[in-house]
Length: 60
Image 1 (cartoon, rainbow, N blue to C red):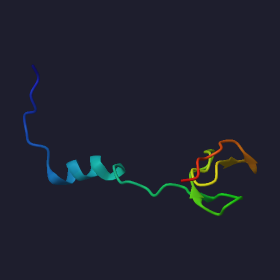
Image 2 (spheres, helix red, strand yellow; image 1 turned 180 degrees about the horizontal axis):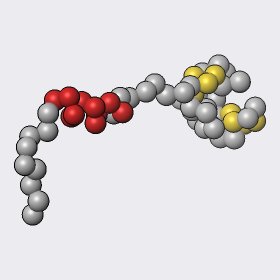
Image 3 (cartoon, rainbow, N blue to C red; image 1 turned 135 degrees about the horizontal axis):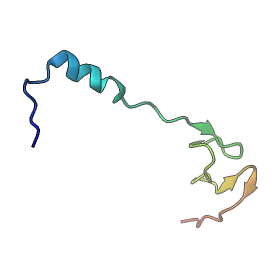
């Protein structure tokens, strides 16, 4: 089984990991209630999608 001959240095390791950073999600405002939601999803607060009621939510 192949084994590395030398230890991977800190610089090479960090260059490899330079693309591992997390980015903030792209949030939009629901046109009906103004809640911040992910695009192309039904609003979990009011149940609207593309200005139409898609899901009726229970009121507790």
